[in-house]
Structure formats: C-alpha cells, structure tokens
Length: 310
Ligand code: UDP
Ligand code: MG
Image (tube, rainbow, N blue to C red; front, side, top):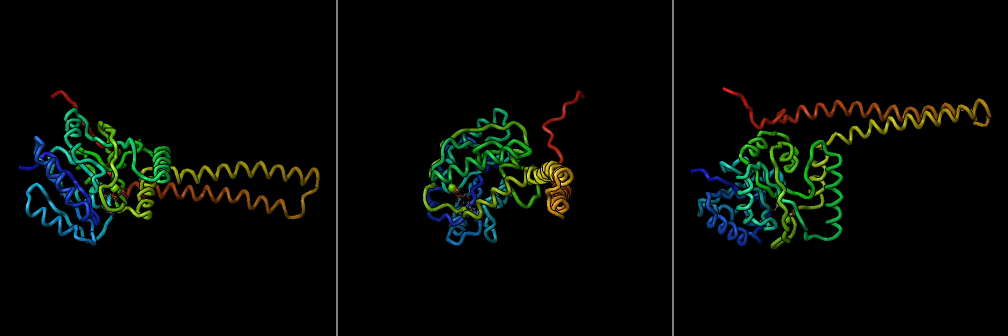
C-alpha cells in the first residue's frame, strides 16, 4: 500500500546529524496515525552519508534512499526526492539538520485536511548571526517587491504540499529551480504556519556563500520581469533628462554664445544616445524575457476545479 505522506530530506555531508535525524524520523513514523514514507536524498556527499542512507533504507521499509551521482545542490536534491516520493496525499520537505522539526508533520497534515494545498512554514526567529539575519530580511523584502507573483516573506522550503501541487512541480522542467517560488506559483489555498526555527543540530551549514547567492539570484530572476523593465525605464529617464540638458545647452549656445565649439554636438551625442542605447537593450530584453518564459515551459495555468451541471 502506498504511504499517505512522504517526507523528503536532502542530505549533503550530514553524517554527524544522521543518527539523531533518523531516530526523530522513526519516532514520527511510529506515532503517526497514517502511513509515512521517508525519502532520504544523498546529494553527492563526500562523507559516509550515502552509505548510512543505504543501510537505513535496506533495513527499514519506511525509508527510501536516493543517491545522486554528484552534488547537484539543495534545490535539485529536493526535486529528485519529490520525483520519487509516493505519498498519495502529500509530500513534506524538511532540512536534514533538524532545523525544521519533523514532528510538525501531524499539524501540517491536519491543515491539509482543512483544505489547504500548501502549508509553508514561516520562521518566527532565526538562530543566525545578526548580519546574516539582516541580509535575509532585506533579501526577502526586495524579492517580494520585484516578484511577479506573491512569494511569502521569511518562508523557506520547509513545507507540506498536496499530491497535486507536487505533481505540478514535477511537471515543471525548468533548470534553475527555486522551489518556494514554484510552490507559490502553483497557487491554490496556501497556509503560513509560524514556527521557531531551531539551530542546526550539529555540523556546519552546507550552503556556501556562492550557493546562497545563486539561490538568491534564482529567486529574483525566475519570478520577476523587473530587472529588464528597469533598463527600459532607465533609458526613458536618461532621454528625458538629456533633452532638458540639451535644451539648456542650445539656449546657452544661441543666446549667450558661451559654449565652446563642438561641445553641443558632443553632449547631444553622449546623453541622447546613451538613453537610446539603454532603451534598445531593454527592448531586446523584452524579447529575451518572452523567449525565456516560453522555453521554461511552465504549465500555462492551473485549474482548481471545473464546475458544471451534468
Ligand atoms: N543540502 C544539500 N545539498 C547542498 C547543500 C545543502 O542537499 O548542496 C542540504 C543539507 O544537507 C541540509 C539542507 O540542504 O539538509 C539545508 O542546508 P543547510 O542546513 O546547510 O542550509 P542552511 O540551513 O544553513 O541555510
Ligand atoms: Mg540548516
């Protein structure tokens, strides 16, 4: 019989936390009233994580192990887990470092039963350095400001999604994946569940600064037309300002005659044409955006239900 709920856990060099994680998960499986499957994904770890996953999956039928060929990054590791998760009703996504308490599966599941398709966790607090906290705070607000769709503030990948949302996400073939955005994109009724984010159980963050930045860029560029539109707007402002300045220079030239020879032409060439160039780049950008949207191949729309009288 297929499990009702799958829990997907991406793991990259997490041998230190593994035992603790598995015992917490086993306890969740044991106490839950419904059938749970745990999908452990090894994201090309260089330590013994893959081996540990194999042993666990071989000895306990509640666990399924997925071992990736190399390190693909957190978002792809979760995507791989989603693609094999069999949960007929829902899939929950948690981090492997126990920052996201797996016990919440019960609360999330009861919200699902109330009719929500996505239950995403909102971090009430973070146990990070003040600088990192501030950077996250700024980033989420910037991202929400420029995004085409509403991506909730301060929520990560920790969430439970219904089977149909998981199916939609699995159907999206986009290469650069920002799951919390894709999850928002699908829509339906979504519920924000506030929780206190624990500190990492053991070990260090597996998100290097480079990976963090790459995720941040995906969050902006995959869900926003703003950067391209901004160039066009900048071009328009430049042209308007340069026209004002050019008029001023022309007046000085013809009525006061105190402008050096050749200066007027130079100013017109520089100011006006930099504006024209910016607009042109923006226009090309508009076409690139359209090509990007087309090749990304997301479903055109998501239907919740069709109502008709038979
Ligand atoms: N992770 C992964 N691949 C990576 C980086 C991280 O699968 O390339 C996993 C990691 O093992 C953890 C989760 O993604 O289970 C979140 O990573 P981490 O806790 O290091 O990120 P942070 O909480 O510091 O943002
Ligand atoms: Mg963590």
